[in-house]
Image (cartoon, rainbow, N blue to C red; front, side, top):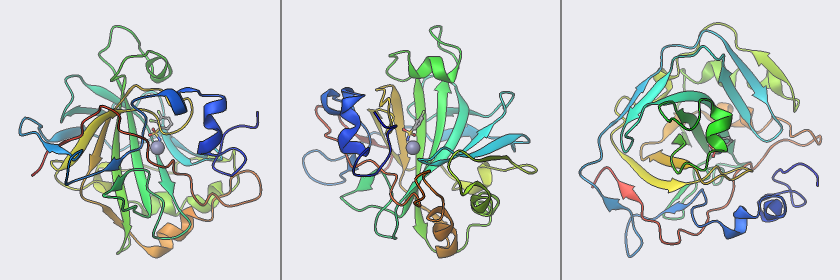
Length: 265
Ligand SMILES: NS(=O)(=O)c1cccc(F)c1F
Ligand SMILES: [Zn+2]
């Protein structure tokens, strides 16, 4: 089977062939975050602000893996996540993006059916579990909260100076399979909104194969602004088949019996 991707031949509708959980899973991601009506997100006053400790990364690889671009710090990185709905401390693993070929599509999660032009995913794994001691083991662990992914919507507006070091590097990883070592330090904290108080949270999965159902999702209400030029830079990245990646987002999955909690009214 050709490796998975987002084209007609190898896209989300075909993933069930290698990953049956795509169709049989009951906690698949992404989902449409509905804010009113029957199955809407329910305010939970116990939900605390998310706490991130992201010292600037000094050593990292920036990679085009053919289905996204990914920023991966070296193993020594000490970045951590806690708070919010979490009861444990999580270690930062990588961040990557999902985007579309125009501003009306691209995010994986939706809000009342609305898509944003892109979505940033910060991937972490539970570093306090007795059952695994690495990201790869966490993904394969069947632990319902082995991973925690922070999702931030991107919307088009002013240029994002904090993300400029990343968007300026996209042309250097235009070809699928290419990677560069990230020059200098990168301050991820500066990319995020000041306060990490308003978010949706639910139990879900990886949104790409193997689609493991091991993710505590935290999707923030407040989008991050990027410029049109920065969005265009994502759309020029190639997928390894001589075409730009122009829609590496999975459509929303059924909620089944899940509920979505909101940390805000
Ligand atoms: N799109 S995603 O955040 O669900 C994701 C993708 C690949 C590996 C992961 F660990 C992961 F979390
Ligand atoms: Zn993702």
